[in-house]
Length: 295
Image (cartoon, rainbow, N blue to C red; front, side, top):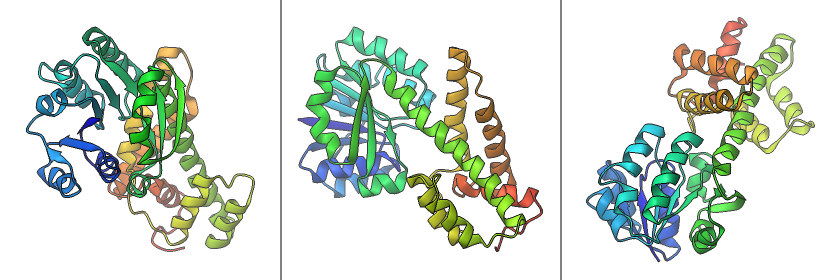
């Protein structure tokens, strides 16, 4: 199986690496030559263009930042869809709107391609550890063919349907993450002002009924005030915009999510643009009159 991987950034690079290390023949394409060389060092072959990368592949993966970049890369005259051979499998792992994904569905179907929507749940740390969760929708027979390659960089794989369901599944998961971060920020500010000791409060949250794996992971980092970015406020805001757009399309009033969008926008503007989105905690602390440089 010849695999192409287009877009080997913070998420795509480790996915490509794990497939190479798993024995799959891989070619890669990315505008960042440093990332290409990193992939080559792990056994991949560099392709000169998207068209060259896609044309020789049985399976093409892509991991791209947003709707506009995916649309250009997938649907351009020399893009992924136009360059792939009929009968090949296209797997997109990006977090994008159901609307742009539907555009690709139409073009891929007309080209005779098998199109899998496969956004991944997890952050860059999860990707580096090979611990992502794949959320998959599209033709089941195509999914079964490429599942062994996906197994190399995931701990779980969830097939959710034949159409755009995976796009909605990713938005559902990230909606819970975004709003949990906002709720956690308010709760921690309330606890600090009420006299709770910081580490004890985080231990209590982790041990309680609300201590989900995500809360426990963030609590461990918050104990030492570690805001190293795995996903920035601006990146999460992009995903929230996708949620709100989907809500508008489907007639769902996502009121809490709209408020969280404003909180992330404020966190970004408050000097935390290059920190993890959980820095919303510091934004709420400042608004509450609490120090943000110590606890």
